[in-house]
Image (cartoon, rainbow, N blue to C red; front, side, top):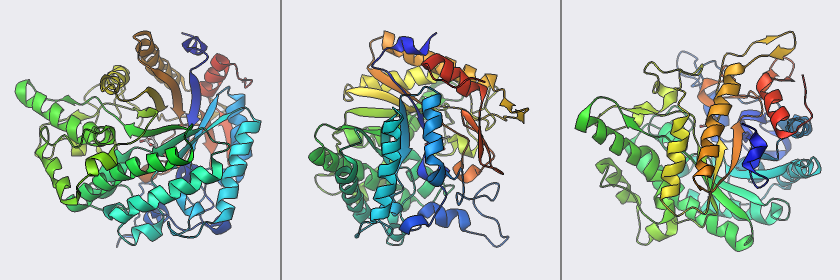
Length: 452
Ligand code: FCB
């Protein structure tokens, strides 16, 4: 397979997120985000919620090293760079006065992309809510959805002349379930009311944000991204079916259907009725977003045992996946067919004009030796998953982009600096970037100049 055979209209990109790479947590007037707070929180034993005790205070230092990172993206031959904006650089407390230095920073970043021939794809929210908004309830407070629409409007006005591709949210599933029910991600809440409220308010914010963008930038390419899994029930017979159906409702449909005007699938998972307490008249319409594309993010399938709260502890970060199949270093089952399945499932709604794979990738125990990182399993992972995208296109599905997670090894949330997802190896002691074999593979395929 040659990647460029997917066509000239197919976008090849790499993805990152602000908190995972930027560092410089209080540079140029930035306010704290919930991830700054969360990673510094200590329990009575002095342990933080991050497995290796690290934080994103430095990460890959990309706030300062972005020119070098963007040059790498161009050398690897990619067409596009998907990055996220740290809201608290723009509005330090999440509302009110705009911090011009924050806007200036992202304009420099976008200009650097454009000069390098790399298309900027901007994600507005990749989990780092300003702490100031958390202090008034965060996503459990409906007001936060209004503040998100305000912030979206600010960004559209500030960068609409240079940014064509916009994404509202990165994976609401992780904000809502990992952040408000399981508590493994910021803000670390563990409650059903927080789960239901945040679910509904993030969905509302998607609708409102999409309309704020469209009103300001009628010709922009507007999308949002979702973590998707083909839930396959474990066990046998009717119970496995039931498990699969209810997990699908809780993990996929509760995030996808509200934003396309279908409301919540509570007939498949009664637990979702909890959301009704937060709904107001007209909310089904308010949540319906005006989108040009859906961003599909697929890493692994989640196994869904039949349990009273279906699916919730199958999120791979918390021990799901596995079951004898080949896995990544995080124990995430490698199942390329799953990507084809979720692409087909999203296409079947008939509501998304286009689909883009906005994230996919794998962490392995990479070793740097003599200046090289040999990562054949990552190359195989990409080949097998991209083959699924090619097959979907051959079936006529309008999927027209693929973004690798990630450009470089970075701060992997509650798992810290140990997992390595990059096409480029980060030496955290020196901040040296070393292109892995998988990076060279993309460069050779995409017509980039990087060679070993
Ligand atoms: C996705 C996240 C991304 C990164 C990868 C490994 O769920 O969107 O930030 O953590 O997983």
